[in-house]
Length: 204
Image (cartoon, rainbow, N blue to C red; front, top):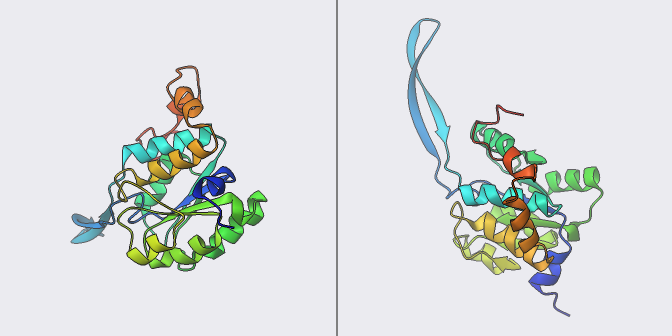
């Protein structure tokens, strides 16, 4: 018996995202910055990425729905750490060549099963998690092999609202999307103003 994407989404308690190509459009900007080291002029390369504000709102909506969120990425980047602090993500795993290791840690820590985990990916490194988790999501511009193994493909591309699509699909399946949206715009709700403050994670 085939299980529908909606049925899978109803069980989700944790949503995990790849970063490059999912929360970003996959572009990695390396910017040369002149500086002095021990009085000697030199140039260091600084990495930059672009994140989508709609996806930031998605994390707030997910939290209002009682879901926890995190990222698992192969690369190590300070931009990821800063964005994760802005969004107060519960799980941040960088430098993960084999992402199921991080998933197993999260399962042990949170006491959840694979059926209760959703994962959003775009490339073949994401396939081991997508093949095992309860709800596998591919962004619309993911590699074709990845989309073929997903339970749901987002309408939008990575870095252009795909994470929002995934979160809204899950909340809709759980009957919570309208409730979470209203809570998000309620000025008395403490979650919305406390998240995605755009200060590089400096504020607590």
